Image (cartoon, rainbow, N blue to C red; front, top):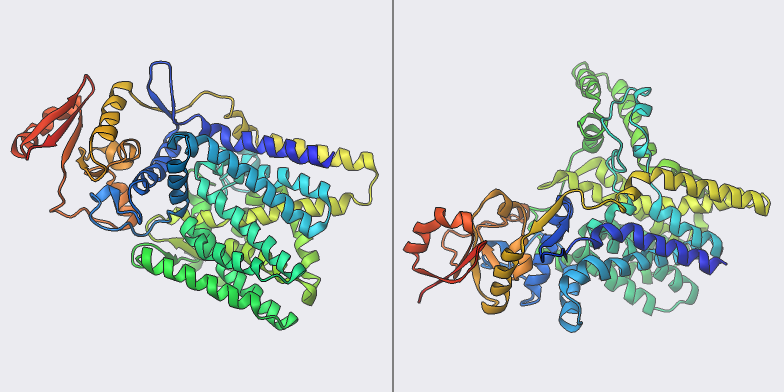
Length: 540
């Protein structure tokens, strides 16, 4: 029975997490290529462009700056893995990225949650139920906005991320973020297995995963490294065992090497900004929309009323925690139970707790330099922990009841969580709300580029707003560009050199007239044209 429950919740997770992304990268009856929503279109084409780049060369160059410099300030090991799989498998990159790999990720996350909860409790039913509450659990941001008016808040809409926290159910738009959560739980399991068996092989694998985690998802590496080191110190102090600490240091060295090879500290990184997240949550129009919070804050600072300021931010912090976690806040019961063990806390449990709290604290005191709001990507490690802790707490509470009362309570909680996710889940049945269409005739030109031009070719695309924002050409044609992808260049701190060369021009029909002089001056000839697009090659 427990196996059936686990399988059902896993399949439900695969559908709920993956059905929206699975509708992207498909062709309609006319042969046009469809993408589901601008957010997914933007993020997926960044990673598809990286995959395309690494199908031809590794380490990758900055494909959006003509490939003249190595790519810096971006995590790309997940994309490297997809590129490798695409080279040795019969599946297309679009099928892998939008359908096959998301399903594998959902199953892996469900398995990691199951085995983590089982390791903590020894209860297989609790572990199976944790799959649902961890993946489907959400905050109170989905409540009707009028509910918050009585607390002096004025949100204009309901949303699962209203309180500046991404929820697991909607995170497949960024698959590598979920891979980071899987690594988080796998490292806990490896530490726990080492403490059970004493086999050093578990620590070797832990150290390698830890070292690579930054390249897969930088946020995960930043969370997990100090957590492993703290767990190692804990093991040294209370168990007189140095191995976890030394292997943690080794993992840190691997991560440090990767960091210094791929990151420019002046471009990417965290900057100290205490309570910036709370300020934005309270005052942004698309969040809680409460400008009087800002007025009160500035007034208290002006008159040096620091006690009132502390109370004000405590008020905001309370809403942040309650709003972000929802009923998962009950997981505090399980956290307290672990903390009461004091010196009997295992190193694996210490890692789990430290990683969770680090992921909670970082967004409260820092933001991200180039993309400040991306700091919210730390928080899912905490919400994942709280999803598991909530399930453990529920089973602790119902352990005193009868079989029928247990089933009734669990059923009511499942129904409440599904009701809370109603808007998120309803979108799975709806047609594409903001379909982005790449027309069939444009795809014909792209296919010509992909099959008839050398992989080393560099294409100039007009720097219009669409090309600046979306890396559609480099992802579909698998060629490096100049003129397109300038938003990505700004994000990674790259500048296209003025002397950068390009071998080809790619224009949509309406654009070609505006660039006629460029074609003439650069001695380009037409090598492909149809009703929608033209491809020019520089004459020798």
